[in-house]
Amino acid sequence: MSHEEKVKKLLREILDVKEEDLTATAQFRKDLGATSIDFVELVAALENEFDVTISDSDAEKLKTIGDTVAFLQAKTA
Image (cartoon, rainbow, N blue to C red; front, side, top):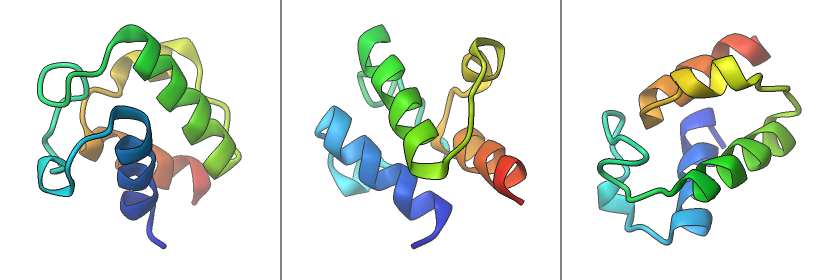
């Protein structure tokens, strides 16, 4: 499973959104309706799934699915 597929799977579980809403440019808060609590849960899930640490400053930069996939690919390369 690719990074993008894993991120989308986590988003479907946490935010209960449809697959067709999960585009690379979809913004977590604006387009997918994530609350601050949802975002914290997502960051924790990403850290667990990819075995990485995501600092608060890095988390603030993660606005879209594409941002997140690129960040994780760089961290796990």
